Image 1: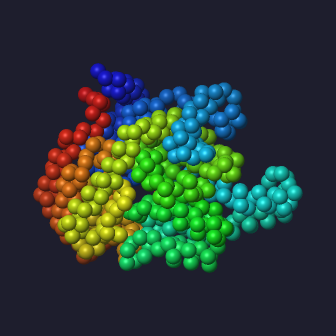
Image 2: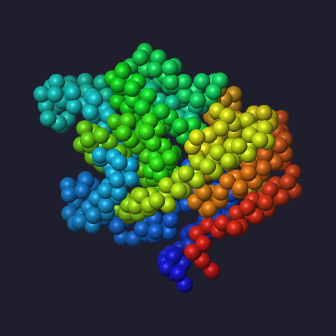
Image 3: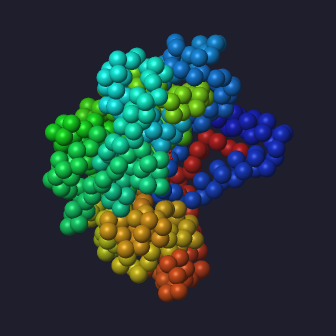
Length: 471
Ligand code: PLP
């Protein structure tokens, strides 16, 4: 029996001895993931080494603080883990500084926002008051600093153009921390309108400009965004949660690599980067002290076991195979886009430069909600997403977002992408909206069943976790 099978079987049996329902859920999840055609752009399959690095006693240790400066005793092994993860992250992204403690992408963004506010607002106020730290301020001084911190401006990509809730939108804490204004895309091209962005920045004068997205299918010119930020005196932050794998794999280089251009970069580690669920922050050295305050400023104690898995994922991403993988992710995404375009499916921006494709389902008479569910009924897992100027709002939407990081990890290539495009087209043309609601629809169960079987046939030559046999 190979080492992965032995390890996972033993772990599941240990869990089963305490609570069989949890063991069953773990086994069922592998089964579900093996069976489904996963096109969710933000998901992937971490390697067995990444998964196994998380199941151990590194989880038991409190380690608030940073390497060598902990608020708890006995952290020498967590120090090793964190230092190795930082070393790999810096080398992978060619970054002068890395912080690997954030528990998720949202947490990484919060760390970055507080670091920017500290750098641009708190430090100047402390200087003005002649004080060293916030605890030294009088109540009146503290009130003045709090008012100033709460009145700063952020410019980020609009939600319907592909921005993320954490980029200053009202349903997220960032929308309460910042006065936000958005930039969008040119309706004719579906691509970022840089001259319009520059105009908004000149007029709005934000403290921070955020680049990065969850659902924008094109490259972003980060050199231009930095130029605009410099012109208006803004700190430039990039949230590369979605495309970090393409940066790591050197698909996005030069003007399209955010790391040399941004003052601060945040990411998740589990999407195209293919690591454990988690986040990280990269920064220019002048922001490092403020980022280091992430825990306990906005984060709970670091998760030693997850930092260990991040170290493994970063080390994997430094290998040449990962660059091959990243290039294939984009080749697959472009093949999928071409397959859909050939079948007259409308794509936002008319194609893709990255790992994701955004389908406009409006021409099919469907909402995103109806299309998402009909695809799911047919064994194709996607998610609905707003499109620019979406008439159906953020809940029902008019878009379906699909991405190739997961299928590419399984080994599928360009040839299979055309087959996948055909399945998507078949389901979208076969789904009839039910006029009584934006959620209901009719789909012939025989068609759904046929597509599910075809999806299983496409996946069959590419078993997921082939080394893991749970019996
Ligand atoms: N930032 C962007 C651009 C994202 O797309 C996401 C996740 O969808 C996040 C942040 C949040 O990541 P997490 O779910 O790990 O908090």
